[in-house]
Length: 494
Image (cartoon, rainbow, N blue to C red; front, top):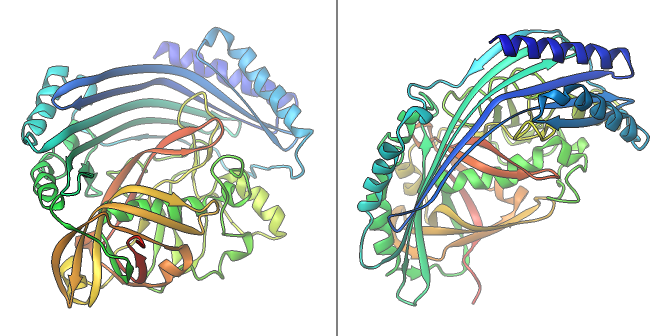
């Protein structure tokens, strides 16, 4: 504690020093610890047992309307780290055409702790492995050619200090788990069924989440039974039909065709050289019909039990909750303070009033950029999955991403899924192999004809959302219900 107090004083002194120089704004993130443990079991054998511990400081400086960033894990070089961040900003300011501005925000002091009961890192390795092996034991069959279980535990303590006087401490914990099994179908092709640890949106995020049987371990028998049926199933035939999207597939649909296109820095062109742009323009907000009136999408941190809930972003903005799409109309973006400054200057008026609290970084040595938080389709009024099936004349139910291809501006997509079930005349019938569907983003969402109620809503976790140069893989969540889209092109033309 004494060391941290001394370090904070040094950070504040260096911030003051830069502000008396040519800095317009400074913020600092000090990671007291950033811990990771990864366990991978393949066919019952421990293939990976990886533990990483990191700590360090990242300094971001706004000078001349441009950002400069520097980071170090060697705290004896603290002053040099600050100086380099300032020099980087001054150099960048000679190149920028639009000068960024953080605006004015009142200072505040706060803290946020992810709710948990049992720390993953306090649990003995043997106990973790015994639990994972108990899942693997349920999957053993002669006809299954590979079994894989991956578990990832994360823990971090982050201290934030800015030149505005804001000080925030965050204590974060996340757990991710994935199980998959592979077998050969009747044509000799590999087929896979898998399941990821999801959440109800409520509760805690400690070891108790991982061992909750309803959310992870109990699904092993289900996917084994489904795989046994899948390898004998017929292939999905090419054609247009309704698609009922389960949460296990819907989360990726939302991630790729709503989340990424609505990141404000991507809309402004910052990702063009790496991950593409967005079909959304600044003049789209308040006007563009993104989907049918049944489509309502929110962003924010009101989901207790999600990796997309982090209390405060890496600019010290409190994570709020707001609509991105309201009854099908695009109304807001995933944003940060400086990107709002640029967008408003380019628009020529106050298009965005405040930050969405979405400035996030994956580590102390990466600069924050606009990132997804919890991007959610809100539950609708069209009943349960059974109700939606009953209202469907000709369609398929799809679950679990297998592969995906996305247009460079997110304007169209193609998804292959692990499994599908046929729906005929309001009844769920046979299972189908090699399902896929594709479409144009706006056409797809404007054909949303049913959105399931709260009983169909689940929070699915993402631990590897990639963005930025150098690349940053970040964690987030998607709360999604079952929903149905009509007149979708499905299957592959032979």
